[in-house]
Image 1 (tube, rainbow over the protein chains, first blue to last red):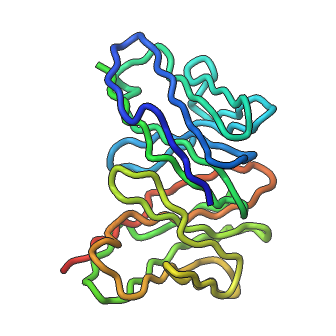
Image 2: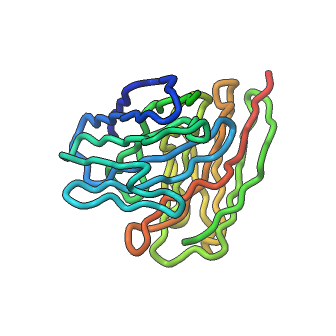
Length: 114
Length: 111
């Protein structure tokens, strides 16, 4: 298993600004993921972040809008750029440990854009 | 990537056994079946994973028939704290490794 922490836990931001969300894992992991979740809805995968390679983005998400860094095996950041109210959501990071698809999630970052 | 289908919601009462079934008709040979639990305002929590037959841990059991086209998460003697959304995911590490969460099953446990 793994313990994942995220910062900040929540933020209220002005439109047009950017926010960087940090994700820290208590052990070294190869694969990390970033998700978005609207309240009451399921999770949508934004991108996969493997250490040492460029992040892989899912359909509808682009690097200019959601740049991701993965500088080492325990840390990743997601930036939400040039925010609009439509970016208001919960952003979750996860790390895969052990068996494939066995992911451990952070508590999430609740973002509100005004 | 195998698509999954689950009931949108289920209701139960404390002390009962709850079985949540997930259909995955297009499951591939190398695919694992993984279940997550999510409480409000928290990230999902890994519950159990299996490939075939039956897997049991301290939280739940996972039953997978021989054709692997479905799976059933079994929660013994549920309590109010088991009220959550349960997600079934199917996939493997190779190829297009895209963890896809469906709508999940919202389980409400009543006193």
